[in-house]
Image (cartoon, rainbow, N blue to C red; front, side):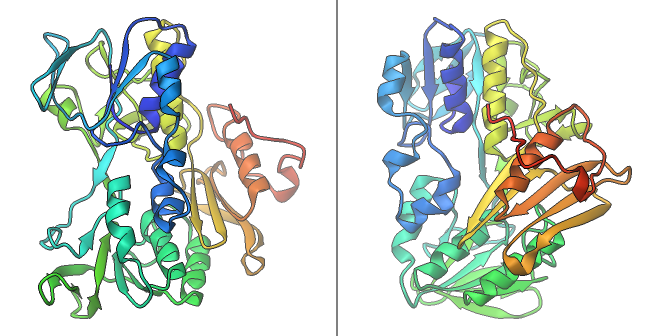
Amino acid sequence: MVVGGGQAAAQVAVSLRQAGYASSLTIVGDEPLHPYMRPPVSKAYLRGGLGTDRLTLRPPALYQKLEVEVRTRACVRAVDRDRAEIRLDDGERLGYDHLVLATGAVQRPLPFGGAGSPTVHALRTVEDADRLRPHLRPGRRLVIVGAGYVGMEVASVATGLGVAVTVLEAADRVLARVAGHAVSEHLTALHRAAGVEVVTGVAVSTIDPTNGTTGSVVTCHDGRRWQADLVLVAIGVLPRVELAEAAGIRCADGIAVDEVCRTTDPQIYAAGDCTNAHNPLYGRRIRLESVSNAVEQGKTVAAAITGRTRPTERVPWFWSDQYDVKLQTVGLLTGHATTVLRGNPVDGSFAVLYADGDGRVIAVDAVNAPREFSLARLTLGRAAACLSFPTPDDWPPPGATADRS
């Protein structure tokens, strides 16, 4: 039994069948679609260039061929560990031999009122995008609260549709949690050149309606105010741990799992954005919001259930599309002490290497630099410990490629 509707849920099911798992297999998700990709929701899907048929990770016919039952619009209300059952919102109970929680993440709530207004939006699901897209019309004013991946991606999409966009960020730069200063500066300049008003170092205090449902006023702690026809709140996500917590499974910034993604209940596993696991590359427990992590953990769960051991040790990687720029990141730059710039941001293609205090590479940002991204995956993922910080001459040769399996 797999609970969830994203990358990890689909990967668990497919990998189980590939490993020869012959028992009944069900995916239960609360959304209307079969498991689908979330990254395009704030990019091509929001822009209107991608239909739901191209969002789904596998066509429905494949699940039928693999004899995987997919239940959509089905909300799991509780996990009964004593009876090895899950309970749906309509009261139906489904038993399990193994349960996989791939519940993902949910939009982080505003620390103040305003989220209930019809002009205030979040963007996590296809349904969120469907509600937001009709409002992205020329001449409309959009205020985005938060300058992370989603906020900046929506800014690029909305600007391309003729919307006047303002981005408000509490940190002193955009993408402060996920990218280095050089990348933040490059993307800020890119957005401003496209007409986006990017304001950093400001904390929003209230979002108030103006005339009924016709707009909002966004007010910051310093007193500055912005009029908006619509507001997007993009201040990050929280892991969906409610089912696990209510069932007595250990959670700490996510569902705590071991090296094979097993929870504190040996019958229950977890995978994807909802988990918190020890990462041997960084020597600490980490919660990752990453497609690559969801895929790797899905494979790890399937291996464990079918009696094999496949610890997830690969270096995480991420990407973001903004205008004609593709930002690809390998690793986590938190705690870096040194950076080396490869290429020139003025040329629109460059990479930044980050090293810790011991000179070990821990992360790489690649901006329109696919070769550096590929080589970073190869270099950082080669061993259980990051390699020594390379000079340009030490970087792997052009013929080297990353493991894409």
